[in-house]
Image (tube, rainbow, N blue to C red; front, side, top):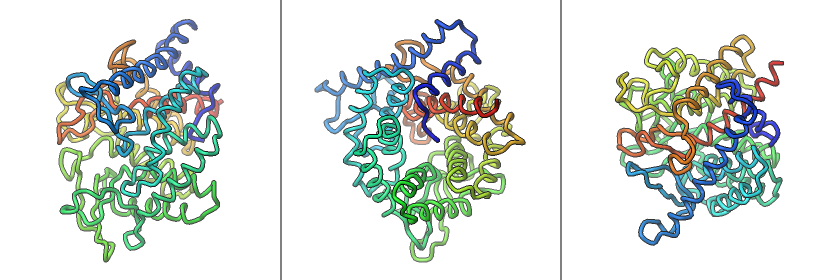
Length: 405
């Protein structure tokens, strides 16, 4: 299961920290406390910014990142990143049992409810499953379940039978009739969940069809992925193969590769379709064996970007990759240790060289992520989804260690 119990998450964090730096037990508790104190700090800074009449946007519900001046970037519920702080707070509550964290998690989750009817976006998984989904597992609040099911229903309205995929963006219609981005693989988990919860096969069928269409069209012979595939809505044929946030159309945008790895690993978990597992392994091989992957395994923002100290890294891509590898290891016995060791090495690098010290980065856990280098936005800054998948990767580490015993 994707989410961890409070006990297993604590054990995961302590095991991770002890494996990476071997401090005494009191230091382990201090390290666990650092994560929760950072998130509380982040929530406090958000509250301060929200009530500041000079800088806050009226529709803000959470914080996404820091700008170059070190100020918070506040966002509304419709932003694709709106669910990650809530999700991180839920994970921190699972870690500590701290009721104050639970209250914060509830407070950051509640304003997202209106998004369950927002049919103008494909990002229901990111927004709703990472927030209400985390909350539902920990609380079994039936209202959260209803919100998630409605969110899946809304997401399914973006599916096009002719194309065989869920539409990603509604913007840039001058470029693409029907754009599908590799990121969209991450939103399929909500549909799989809803199918199991309701017994409605259509959610499952849409998710599988989308995964199959993406598998057929998004990947190059070397198993790297394009970012955006543009389809003809009348024929379903591919019109464009682009990379919107990468170095070039034929480059391998790092976070896109991580989305693909995570997405097909998750799809194999939900379906046991062999081609999904094979694709996940191929993507993992591309990432881990790439000659331009730095020694610390934290990729440059694009795998084809210049290998230099001045080239920004993407800690978020590393965190997503680590989380995916911990799960992938469960399904490939012959490569289990390789994937586990690779994931652990990524986590160790993040913890040692990319994690915030107490009080840094206004409470974000990780620094040095890159949102969109081509548009010069969120370059070499903390971003909330990096924190979310960092915490998830730590939580998954204990499960793999349990299963290996």
